[in-house]
Length: 272
Length: 257
Image (cartoon, rainbow over all chains, first blue to last red):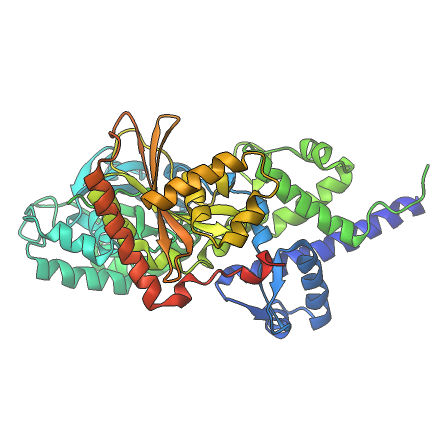
């Protein structure tokens, strides 16, 4: 009995130490070139001696390196031993699913995923909203990049030169609200980049009865994997409701992007 | 029965790392008993380590399975490792242009000690295409990108690399060919690949641009294509010449010890 609890005690000390070492290692993902003991101890609320001990363990494995200065630490190349098989970009459906469900649970509205293909975005997945007036998921539906929130938010996060290339062709007009000049598109792109989302303009269907808001799903280079959209009837999602909704959805969008930003998107560039 | 304690704190930490390394060799999620067997620890101890790692985000479970796979923290660390190579972001516009111009997939590889590491890429526009496999690491002599890096390393490095390599003679022949042509063209497993060195002003290549395409979609590259692609890579070389900091090996001190 006493022996068992002694062993469990050792184990629990070991696991606490392990948890500390892993937390210390995680501070290196924030993009700092190097970190000192004091900075890490402040960030994690651990004593300097705990941090020092943890760093010595990581140093022994090569997971961190000591700077030539001898006082700062950086991520070590042995991290590559953790494997590359898992860096394969996951299927966009698998990556987005939990977050689609999260947005649906929060709003009860239709959620859809669009990915860029050529000069368009195509709807590849979605969760259908509740009620008789819910929006359908336009699975397989294709929209030009300058039209509707789902397209415009993807366009806005493309590299400038690809936007230029897209704008070198005539812009198809759907309604009186469709953006129709490069100047209008650029002004909109700047606004979307500033806000972090694209909202409803009534630029796709004439006499629209629906409204929507779209957020970017970004990759490691800040380029779009695609967009995630919440859509509903316009009386439930009028412009002022969208403005109050955005901060409510923000944590889910941020969590999705934290994951999607770990990968290079398999996006096809806008054609010549 | 032995009365020695189950594990010391350091052993617990080491087994956590052993579990992470184990997942580098498998590409399916694993259950606790499989993990325990693979790292040679009692299931109860393994269970506790796994719980600690789960809580720290180093492992995750994906519904509906209760098996474990590497968590977000592991992916973030690997991504952070790649972003230490600043050439990755700097070269992106040129890589994108090259992908558009060629219709081929374009990948940037860097020298990662005695290996090559695929740090970024742009997908091709063919129906049959190969995943970009960003983050993959291979010994230098095993891929066209790696061989091209090897061809443009200082002589001392090449000599040491090939010292215990049974295929040294064949590799030296390929290296001579790459130096003569300025690129390497290969057709392997139905994939064309063309590797071009990104040289610094001293002539050393710490990175290479590799164009890849399925042979069913694309013909072998023409002389004209090769010339035009080489010019695109020169744009990256010009960038590096102007801003040598972009090309620093973040782990230089580590490899040379």
